[in-house]
Image (tube, rainbow, N blue to C red; front, side):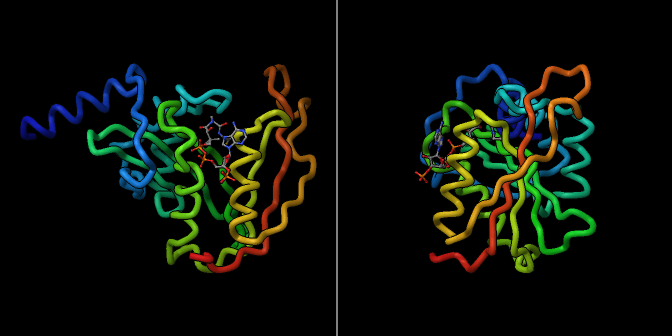
Length: 190
Ligand SMILES: CC(C)(COP(=O)(O)OP(=O)(O)OC[C@H]1O[C@@H](n2cnc3c(N)ncnc32)[C@H](O)[C@@H]1OP(=O)(O)O)[C@@H](O)C(=O)NCCC(=O)NCCS
């Protein structure tokens, strides 16, 4: 590892302590996550409430089995500013389920969340996708705004229904998670 690589690794290791950079979303590299990204994704998710923080092992599995349907956004200094996890449910080959979207606080409001979702939808492996599903908490205005914006840009309808209710989370104090379905998906207007 050369000095530059080593310094980038150190910066990435201190991801959770970094204030984040207000970079235009266009200054970031969007790519599929690698196993080496998983611990930085874990730290990013920790810094992005109200997201549930899954175990590091979950982010390793996503980078291993679902890398083609996940995205990281990396700035020139090596720090991860954004992450999307998504997968194609086994019995729904035309559906992309978007699990978590995280944008570092310092990079919000620059269009990065929407850009990562659009980047995913442009991947050839997802050319057969006609429906996007996700779940949202009742009060997550940012998440709802981001998916509403995507639906507007792609001329999709959104339907909302109950899915995971409070009792499904048992003793964990967790808000309900409602299902949003966006579709039908058409080609990007450009
Ligand atoms: C949700 C989140 C990913 C949005 O990221 P972002 O990069 O700031 O979003 P964008 O800049 O791409 O905005 C996309 C759209 O959402 C809207 N939006 C973003 N934040 C919003 C907010 N707090 N309230 C209302 N609308 C909002 C924007 O106005 C934009 O709409 P437009 O295209 O019509 O202008 C980010 O706020 C975040 O990481 N939040 C914490 C984790 C979380 O709640 N994740 C979502 C659940 S999976």
